[in-house]
Length: 222
Length: 222
Image 1 (cartoon, each protein chain N blue to C red):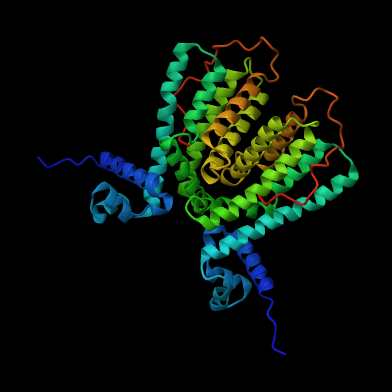
Image 2 (cartoon, each protein chain N blue to C red; image 1 turned 90 degrees about the vertical axis):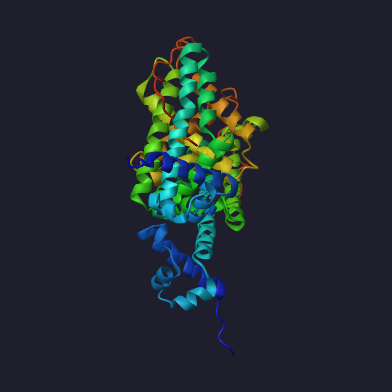
């Protein structure tokens, strides 16, 4: 029998190599050569999977989006069982998506490096916007869990505002780390979520523990 | 007498040529050749001023930051005379910095394209962070004008949150224009500013028309 090569597994292996290069040397260091060296492959073999640097970055970005969803999923499961405070649950999920540790920091750096291409490249835009759509869904679920019963128009506004704030804070955390250290990121998210929860709904009308809208594995890497 | 060439004026002329290329074809189209063609100069003459594409983008970014300050300045002057509502004044200033018209849209696109370099290049980071510092100052002034008398800690939180929100909304407006059209940008800024103004200060303690903290020409292009 001929040897079966698992191409998906090899692509994933290369994505992890791109990831390690970004983590160690920044996005600018990503190249076919650097990725090949990191993975211990020949450049020719790498080019069998990704012929250009842009393709490698695209696949690494897709991996980052999937990794973000993977980080959120167990938090949603915990939350469903714990029946805890929705503010604490929402902050935990947002923190898992913000650049607060090595992996999510690399994901955010990939995202930021990717944005320039989003402006001018259809494929890059489709990948980024798909991740943004997932994050938008997650923000809508979080907001719904925080102010119940929902007013659709208010929820839509709060969801978009939360999404924009998370993007802006994440961006600052990687471009101006001195001004936006991790503790500042946490504080802003915590206070913002608390403000949503203490929002226009009358006191007492927000039953704690009701967050059925936060039901699926979503989110994306930032 | 020898002919005096005004090198600063010629650099500014080239920055405007870069600007027009971005407006018409996007950031990816910027090159020494395209800029030379747009300005009606030879590539060699352009390279006398900017030897690389990165240098041209840096200068165009600096021009965009200065243009943002230029847009805010007359609004501050109007505001000082009109003695109007601080919420309306703040929204006007934020809208002048958000990508709501051609010029500020180009400025935001330059900024987004620049962010990838900010992660890996000291010079690019210094330019971007200087613009971000100016915007941070402006946000602090706006927040101070909105909730008076100030609580320093609350003002610092609201200023950083406003800055992050403006960044996030501006980013969405250029990367996902279908989801963040100009009317949505205006609505989010208006509602957020109104919420700051109706914030923790007791009702009646915020004298309208007091905005001495918003006193200098600041802001930056977004």
